[in-house]
Structure formats: C-alpha cells, structure tokens
Length: 431
Image (cartoon, rainbow, N blue to C red; front, side, top):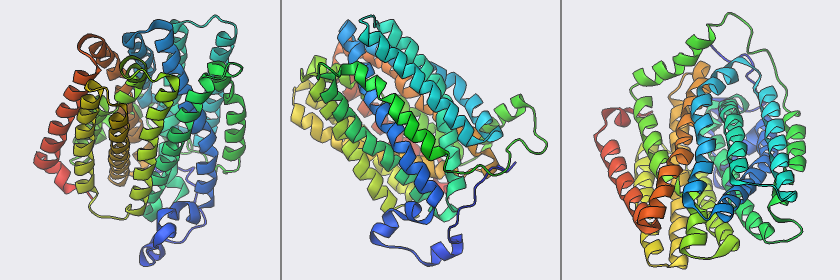
C-alpha cells in the first residue's frame, strides 16, 4: 500500500533529470539542490548526528574508564543492540502506519531526556557502568523507531532519479558528524569544567534545532487512511517479501555478515586506544575521526558515482577492501604502530561507506514503495548486529588480544564477501 503521506517536492521530473545529467559539484550534491524539503531534512539532521557521535565516544570512554574491561565495554554496546534487534520490525510497521515526522519528533525528545539523565548522574558523581547499560538500552529502543522512519522518508523527499544521490549524501552527513563528533568528544572529555557530562547536556540545544527543522517539512495526508491489514500481518510482510525476493535475499545476507563482522571494531576502539596503543581519550577521538574522514571521503565519491550502473561490482570490491583493511588493522595493533593503524582506519572508513551506501541504495531500488518502512526496519535490524557482536569480540580482545581478534574478523569477512558476490546467482540479477 502506498504511503499517503508522501511529499511531492517541487523538483524536475525523472525524465528531465535523466536527460540532463549534471556534472561536477551539481552532480555530487544534486539531491540537496533539487529538493528543498530534503535540504531542510538534511541540515536539520546534522545536529542530532553530531551529538549522537559525541555521546557514543563518551559512553564508550566512561564504560572502559570505570571498569578497565573490554568485556563491559562490549556489554554496554550489547544493551543497545538487543532492543534494536527486537524492536526494529515494529518500528518499520509504525513508520508505514503513522506520519514519519511526528514519529521522529517523539524519538528526539526521548533521546534528549535519556542523555540529560546520564549527564546529571555524572555531575552528581553517581554514574556506574550499569547506568550506561540502561541508557544504551533506551537508545536502542529509540533508534529502532528512528532509523526506519528516517530511511523510508527519504524517497518521499526526492525524485526516484535522485534517490541514490540522496542516500549517499545522507551517509555523507552521518560521516561528517563522525569526523567532527569524536574529535570534539575526545577533547571535551579532557576539559575539567566540561567533561563527559557536558557532552550529554548538549542534547538540549541539538534537539531544539532538530525540532525547528522537522517542523518546516509539511505532512500531507494520513498514512492511516484506507483499509489496512492487521499489525501482525504487516509485521511479517516485510520478512516474507525479503525471503522470496531473489535479489533482496543476497543483499540482506551481505549486510548481515558484514555488519556482524565488519562494524563491531568501532565499538571496540576504546579498548584499542586505551589498552593497546595507550593514547588516551585524545587518541580515541583521533582514531574515530580518521574513520569518519575516510567515510566522508567515500560518501562524497559515492555521491558523484551514484548514477553508475555497476553498483554490484563496486559493492564486491568495497566489501573485500573492508575485510583486508580490518586484517591489516589487526597487524598494526600487534606491532603497536599507531600511525599505521590510523592509515588503515582511513581506508576502512572509505570501504565501509561505499559498501553500506550501495547496499542501502540497492535494497531501496529493488523494493516496492509500499514496503519501504518494513524492509528498511529489517535492514536496521542487521545494524544491531554490530553492538551485539561487540560483546563476544570484546571478550576475545581480553583473552587472545586485539591483534588476533581483528585479524580473524578481517580474514573471515574477506572470504565471505568474495564467495558471496562471485557465486550467488541472485547477486548477478541486481538492478
């Protein structure tokens, strides 16, 4: 069933856009130029993304600082991943049933209150690692509603021809926050009068900006209009649709395994910064920022090449490079080469963004519009595997060391991507 709340931006028709393929910066930033509603959405989202990245670094730093345990660090990530895994399908049904803007407003308010409570506990000297687990759990529930709504709203803000570019620019915005956010967080944690609690208090001005921006985008129609199936029927529709789809199933398999193996390193960076390289919070912020710089570079490159018809080949190459990059990060960790680790993390950032952007784009392009919310919610479920896998991998870091843990992860991921993209027949039928 089509989303009745779809916004029709004042943009050229798909035929006009295709006939006039832009070049240079216009090609790279086409969606921002063509759609005023998408432009408002994109700029408004940056405040939330920036503070989220800063709080992620602060949360990991606090967890490791309080316990000196990579296992506890992984458990804090696990507390976020479990509700994301359990609640994301419900978030997709809700995103298809209710106005996405209103849903996002409620999510932002929840995240703000959660962050302020953590900041207050730090200020009062009462913070404990289990407080961080509870806060992570609340974040996981909120993210399970936030991500399906945001991802499935993008096609309503742009034309079909601009959709790949809009997704790439959406990732570019997230990666820009990944550059600035961790660097600021690493510096601010070391400032006595600001510290980690100040980072959590920054949610208040951030959510005010997000509210202002979202309220500029009108809601037209009511997603609830017309006859709908039962909640459970809609809940299972996305799963059965993906399972039967010849091209979506390999895309989801690639997403699942890559996120399970290839993204958990980000949650474990505090253990490498503090326990392997001994570079403190500033070094942690630098490591996360280097990943973000690489990812932003990949986003902008992908935005430029978003019209390429060889997305499947690009995805296969990006996944292989990601696996090899993580393997080399493990080698650099074993040799205590911090500068070498930073260089590898830059390449990992580029490969990660190329891979995730293409996978996201191909999933949307091969999905019926009426099922955007539910399909994207299941896609968001795969993202919960990163914090989930951080728990066992954190235990592995404590027992066999950071170097061998990352070497095993990178090698396994490389083999899987090569075999999947070469041998699965559905992968070759992507459109």
